[in-house]
Image (cartoon, rainbow, N blue to C red; front, side, top):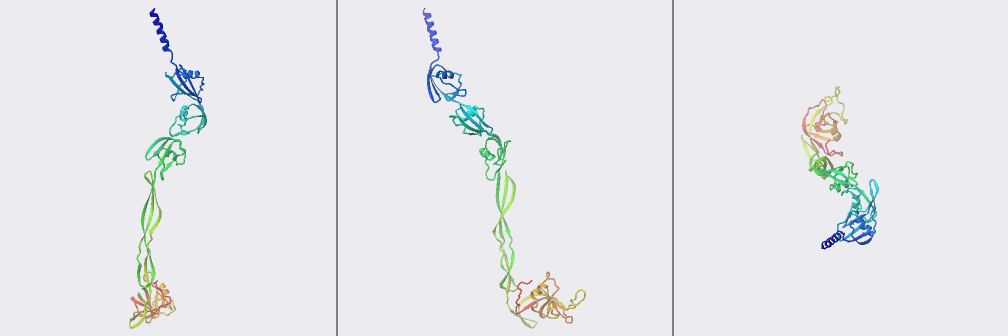
Amino acid sequence: MKNWIWTVLGMLLLITACEAKSAQVTILADGQVHILNTSQRIPADILAAAGIAIGLNDSILYLGASVAIDKALPDKEAYTLSIHRAVALTLVGSDGERIIQTSATTVGQALTEAGLTLYTSDQIDPPSDTPITGAMSVTYHPGGEIMISVDGTQVRTRSAAKNVGQALAEAGFPLVGLDISHPDESAQLPKNGAIRVVRVNESIALTEKAIPFATRSDLSADLEIDQQAMLQNGEPGLAVTRLRTRSEDGVQVSQQSESESIVRPPQDRIMGIGTKIVIRTATVDGVTFEYYRALHMYTTSYSPCRSASPDGRCLNGTASGLPVQRGTVAMVYSWYLAFGFDKLYIPGYGYATVGDVGAGDPSINPYWVDLGWTDESYQPVEGWTTVYFLAPVPQNLVYVLP
């Protein structure tokens, strides 16, 4: 009898132990709070007991994580379940629009659940961590793979930038100064993803160049006629030229001279030519006279028939019309134009007038005077002597010898 009683009691205890314990469940759904006590552990049964319907795309959250509707929850004394209703998310991309029904809590989670692989380079607006609180529109531009060749290395990354320059800046290789890229920084990302950065450097060097000075002559009233002296020393000038050198990736590609600046202009050397007239008195061959100019000149002699033309004809006149005789002298053409009819005194010859053009070569020796004689009185003369230009000074005085 006693054994039977203990058997019955053991079976009752076993049945009691096998019965599920009741737990308090708090359900947050559609802005309301539902509380019930239930021994159910499967979310579908719990929601059914609470009279809450669940949609195909709705999610059930327990401890902030989504749980399966048909799998039992762990054995606890209390539960809090949240029902996250699915909303319409309009996904806008380069290929158009599509609508996603999602109960995800954030934009990134919704895109991932939609089968998209997200990268940090992707452009998502609003950002991936934005909470989903209702129907919304999301713009999504996935980044493409690019290969950047820069500074001797190749860097593989991804970008959804609108142009090459923006992609380089995002990758940490912005164009600086004169740097260029291929394709150009304003171009769209190339289809093959290849971008090359060329580091450009330009340097400026200054080079100096001497500017030679010129020599000019100025008349000087402080110097006597036919005297020369340096009035001012010449000084070379200084010019500075900008030389621009361009290098690309460390290799020189061009070099050109730019504007030249004159730092110091040259200073002309100035030679003074005297214009001061000094009347002097001289006695030569016992003859006393006044003169204003004395030149060292080469003298020769000529007479009408001794200076005959190639056909044998004798001279019958001079350039001035004076007869060929003692007292009429000839000079090279330029000197004749300068001193024609001027009065001279020539040692060993006497007084003379410049009245003819001689046949001397002015390029060899313009300091030449040909002494006129008649054929009967002809005296050969050849050699250097001092020729005196007599006072008074002519009105059309030539200061610079031709």
